[in-house]
Each structure stands twice: as structure tokens, then as C-alpha cells.
Length: 640
Image (cartoon, rainbow, N blue to C red; front, side, top):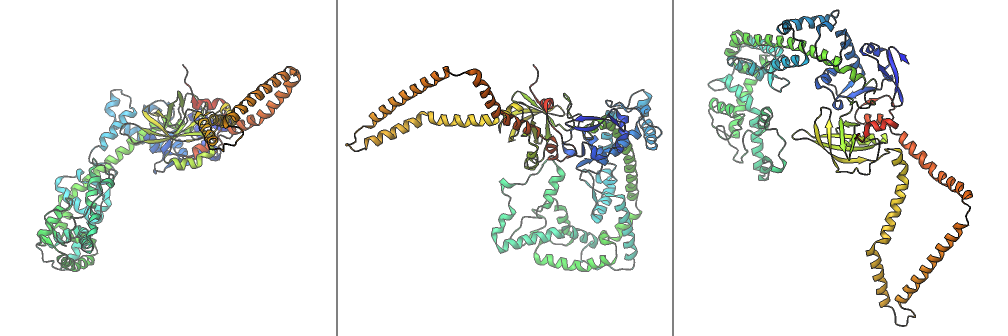
């Protein structure tokens, strides 16, 4: 049966829409998302090309929603006129020249890859990614943020002053720089200050260079206040000294190979080690991040040793200068001084910064077009597959095919377990997934120096008697990497008809077996016999019978009674009419087994894959069953 160009197929016990080809995706907008298999999928558990997934959720959402999938389908259909889902090629003849955006992409590709095209080479995904890598490995990133490595040595001081006044902006690599807007505001504020400064008289700080002194004061003010606060804590109680020492067993995590993180860690440390002397030598034992500024401070304020009284005096001097700068209505830019600001407005370094922004803008335009080309190839290759893991679950229920939903395959106990998904928190997933009525294994995956992963595997056929917490195995992920796997938790549930049907009988047998084991334990019999003999030894002499004679008599009577009973049963069985008794026995057996059969079938029928997925963050519309052959798709013994 077909509807709106999409074939309706029964998958997992429900009717789902399956496109017969990429062209059929045009009809997806005509299908209400309530009829889709799912309306939202968490990005973190999907297994596909990472760049493809990032293009699917450009707003960095945690999930891919139905609207994002429809927008992606529109882009795919507008960009291409013919489709080859398995290809990594950027076939210019297959691009849609009637689309304005695609026309621009074609022109860019012809210009940017002109040499390759002249040689008759086919532009592939690898070529585009290589170009992106080369272009983004330089000092410019195309983000509109200029950092120190991107400018000349002469312009670096200019850049650092703009960052100091505006606060700067971090790029994706967490490096501080400035945007064109921040540079524009800096220049506007500089002009305001210079005009105001022509008629205003700055208060004297009593230093050789007041603007420079104010600048270094502003940079160290908070750290100096913090230092003297710490010193006062020591004066109050020396026990506070322990607050400035880190317990080796509680050292916070820090990637010492990440220079940016190390610098931030050092910058957050105190200016110097606090002392109850309440004095700070500005030239010795200063935090390396602030040592240069501390040296300038000592020179400009003519004090190598700073006391609380001297620090209060300096801060008092700065009050008038703060008010003076506030009156200029240009923020703290006046701390750079009129002379430097005028050189910044009229010097060549400004042209250098502006030229750098132009270069970054050109790089941004180039990267945008390259990424559009990358996006076009990835959408043609992976989007139809995502549809078959979102609009429908066709790939998930197809034997010998690994869907985007599945994290990989677990090999344990001579079997493959293919229904695996990534989870972030076992407790959170288990709280919801227990209602799925599935047998689930929570696994910890480890591989060399890579970050450990947590995966949950569903056991859908066979048995679970050999599965236990701590059992090791191996896991092959979606990329073919091998991981060490270990079961950390198990949720019991129905697996197969035989296992579920026999469960109540197995419990009865186990219970009876345990009773017999207790009765047959030699130590238990020996203890009872010793207890009996001790009781007999302490009995009064006038007892008519001894304990030994009583035991012998009872044993003789018991053996005789047992023999008589067996003889009686054998004699009566010889007289039974088995033709009449057999139907009665069969009826009794059927009467006993029927509830067990019905119970087993009901338990298996209640297995719900939808809840299993929803516990991991999916929004599923359909109730997905695991029945018959399907259960053996996910858990199986490989053929020999």
C-alpha cells in the first residue's frame, strides 16, 4: 500500500512510512510527524559521521527534531538533481543549477578547484576536508575574532590594549581576541576621551607615568585586595594556613598538556603565598602570571614592599582618578593616556588590524562555501539512512545491517548482542527502561587511553544463565574499534519462550534442590547425631532404653515401612487400566501447563523497544515489538 509516494510497511508490529527512493522524500512534509516512528533523536547516541550530525543540528541542540530533518531534506532536494547515496564525489553535473544557492556553490568550486578540474580530477569529500583543515590551521579562523598570532609584533600591543579595555572575545579554541565591533567601540571611545581631555585636567597620582600607573593598578587591584584578605585570615587564626595548601589526594583534575587550562589555573591562584607579616615583596615569590605587572607596580609607585597601609594610601589616590575617567564618558580607555590613544587612532597599526579583519572575512566566506560543499555530499550520503532510522525504523529491524541507532556489537558467552545503545547515566536510563520488560546488560567499555563509554545491551533471545555482573567480553563499535567490555549491572526480563515458560518450574526445582541439599549435608547429620548422643549420655540411669537402642529400633521400623510401601505401590500399578488413566493424566498436565504457556507468551508480548529507546532520550511514536525472528536478529549465535 502506498500513500503520498511513500510505501507503508509493517515494522516492529506497526505501520511505518518507508521511502522507495530519495525522490520520495519530497512527500515527507505531507506526512504528519505523529505518524513517524520518532519525532526526536538524541545526537549523542546516533552513530554516523560527526560532521553530518553537526550539520543536522546547526544550533547545537542536544537532539535532532522532526523540523530539522525536514529542513535537511529540503536542502538535499534543492541541491541535487540526481543521487548516488554511496558516493563521496562532488559531481558538478548532478547539482541543481536552477537553485540560486547551488549556482553560487558551482561557481565557487570551479574557481577554487580550477587546477584540479583542468587535470580532470573528481572533487571528493576528502579534498574538501583537506582544504578546510589547511585553512583553519593558521592564525585566522574565519570566526570574526582576531587573536595575537594573527597580527604582526608591532600591532600586538595595540591588540592587547583593546582586549584589556573591551574584555575581548574567545574564539572556539578558547583564545582571547577582539571582534570588529569591539575595535570600533574602542576607537569611538578613544575619540570621545581625546576631545574631552583637551579641556580637562587629570589629577596627579605622583608617579612618573600616571596613565601607566593607573593601568597596572587596575590590573592588580583585585588580586592585591584578595592577598591582604588572606593575610588577615592568618592573623585571626593560624589554622587558616591549611586553606592555602592542597591535599595531594584531593588535587583537582587538570590537563597539564593544555596550556590554556594551565594558565587559567595559575591565574586563579593567589598573587603570593599569604603571610601573617601582612607585607608583600613585589619583586619576589609573585605568581608568574602577574610578576611582570608586579614589577611595573613597584617601579611606578616606588615601593618594593607593599603593606596594608601603603595599599590603602594608593587606593585613596586612585579615587580622584576614577572620577576623572568616569567624567570622560569613555570608560577606562583613558588609562592608556592621550598620547598612546592618538597614535592608535592615526598610526599604521590600525590599518594592520583592519586588513586582518578583511582577510578573516574572506577566509570565512571561503570556509562557508567549502562547508556547504561538504554538507551537500554528507546529506546525499547519510540523510536517506537517517530517515530509515527516524521516520521509520527499517534499518534497525533489517538483519545483517547495523543501523545508526546501534552502538555496535557485544561478543560475550559465544553470542552476539547487537541491540546496544549509548547511555550517559545508568541509573537514569534504568529508571525508565525497566518498563520496557527487557533483559538488559549495562556495560562499561574501555580502550587504551580513550574515554570510557557506557552502553546498554538488550538480550532478546536464548538464555541469560551465564550472564552475571563482572563478566568480561569485547565490544566492536560502529567504526570497527575493539573495546574491553564488562557487565556492571543486569536488569532481568523475559528473553525467549522456553526461558520464560520454564522460569516458574526452575524456581520450584531450585527451591526443592536447596532443601535436599540442606538435608543431605554430612555436617548437618553429624551435628544432629552428636547432639543426640550427648543428650543420651546425660540422661538418668533409670531410663528403660538407651539412645542407641531407640535409634536402631526406629531405623528397623522405617526400613520395613518403606519396603512395604514400595511393594504396595508396585502391586497396585499392575492392576491400573492405563488406557483410561492416560487421558486423565494428560488433562491434568495440560491444566497445569496452560497458565504457564499463557503467562510466558504475555510476558514476551509486553517487551517494548520504544521505552528502551525513550529512556535514552528518543521521542518515539510507535510501540515497537520484539517478536519471533526479530528477537534472533539482535541476539544470536554466529553460524559455523
